[in-house]
Image (cartoon, rainbow, N blue to C red; front, top):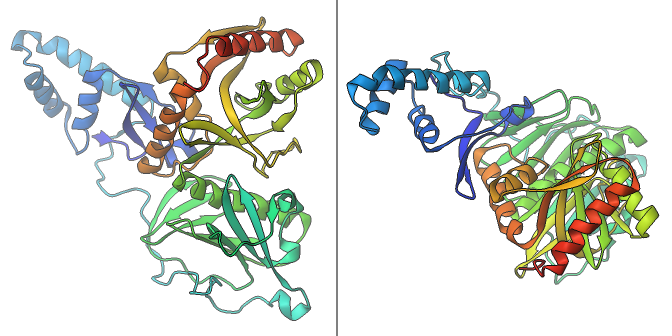
Length: 422
């Protein structure tokens, strides 16, 4: 037996956790908190070992006398059974990466002009009289260039359009190509579910969207600079929505490279700071923020997603074009006051969280890439940088104005204590 390739050991505020990444997240696997002994045993499972080998190393490491070996063996078996129950053990004896694949050696890529390479199996829209557009966007201080047929892009980007400035470099070029992709290079599947497959090779990530037939595949360079979308007409409203969300995936990676993370949350502006309300689907975050708007007359920022960063030592929230079905979008940036993690309850109250759980729960609500152990570690580091400067707490709430009062009291008390910004 050995440990699963879909989990890794992470330390959050000094507390060790075994957390899923990549396919583990796609399979909705849960993480667990462990102690120092659990962390040591996990590290032993980096290679194939028998239970007897584990017991011998365990006893030697902690200098356990032979008389206590039965007790130690029972502890080890209990720990291994727990790992098994959470899908963290591989007892198959296979050492190869189960996600490895082998395909064609040819890989679609962008040429030096930024246009995708490949053979011409689809008719170019330009030949039908549709011009290629070059549309510049500014999102969270990052500049995106959208290049492709005008009717391929959603109008939801329009609020973020800017005039090109030669002095400002383009951070990511998003190209819609009507060329058919050649086969992608040999690599490995990082995650696969009914909506998305993410693959990796030495130079790029490759995305496939099984439920978006108009998008053949997307190739994103590892520096985040070029995202080539291989598409085929017709460019219907359904296609534009699919492309709109495919572009989001490449942007999330770019933002992460620039020290920014995206939290699934609804947000509002109160006392000159942004306050984010995050929870599982159906937890009531949109209902709660709408209650704030109705009873406290505060503006809403985004109904679904928020881009977070540290700017000169100060936590910030930036507007995004992606807002779920809420239609609530704001193009501006605001100081971040805090994150309230919502759960349904029969009465309204606030519960404080210790540092490690506060950071863990926030990280679990991110949609930023966690396709690999390294990418998940980036998310954890970014949350760790934000956490000391903001309020993070659990809000147990009803769908009544009393929930607003409970949250407002917690926020006001936090600001009164002078903790914001420290």
